[in-house]
Image (cartoon, rainbow, N blue to C red):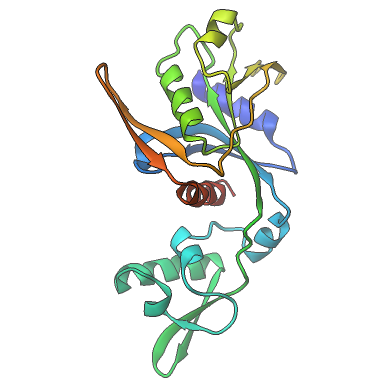
Length: 235
C-alpha cells in the first residue's frame, strides 16, 4: 500500500521545474540512520550550469577534489585518499563526464570539464509518506529527527487519512501535512510547513532509548555537503 501511495505521489509531483526522487539517505554522522521517502529538489540559479556538465551523478569526492577546469593536476595531489580509492573515484567521474584524464611527464593527471556550480540547489523538501495514520509506526521519531537536524528546507507528512487535531499535536509544529488521494492525485494542504534553516548547525538524533537519547551536533558545513550529495543522487 505504501509503495503504491509513494509512486502515485511522485507522479503527481513531477514537473519540469523540479526533480523528484525516492528513498534517499539523509543521515549525516550515521549515514544509514534515516531514509527519506521522497525528496523534491527545486532548482537554484545555477541549475542549468550543473545540467550542462553531465546528466549523470557526479561522485562527491570528485567535487571535493583539488581540481578544476584549468591546469591538469596529478591524481595523488587532487585526492586526499589512498591511490586505489582515488582511481575508483576518477573512473566514476570520468564515466560521468566531470573529469578528464591526461598524462604529463609520465604521471596520471586529471582536470574538470567545467567548474562545479555552488548555487544550483534551490531548496530540498523531505516528504514522509504514511498512507494510514492508524498505523504510524516510527512516524513521530522520524519527523522529530528531520526537524532537529534541519537538513531540508521543508519537511512534509503525506497521508491518505483524515487528519485530526490529535494527529497534528503528535508531530513537530514545523512539519507540513498533505492529505493525498492516490486514485485522483488530488492533494489537500492541511498545514503548511515551516521553513527550516539548513545554514545553521543541526542536532542529529543517533539513537533514542527509554532512559537517554544519543545525539550529535552537525555543523553547517557538514549539512551543506550532505545536501549536495542528496541533490546529486536526486538529479
